[in-house]
Image: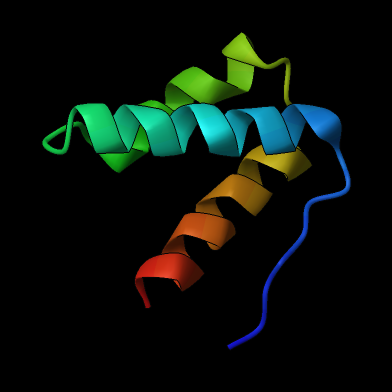
Length: 60
């Protein structure tokens, strides 16, 4: 399995935050977290797409 390493520090922070949220609140919607992470971490549309792919491949 390949490990994807994001280039942006903001994306890394978003992944850490999302992972913590999913751990603390397992029923939390992944889509809602992704939508919330964009403005919270000032992510570009491309970085938001990266988050979606990151979690999609992680589940896959």
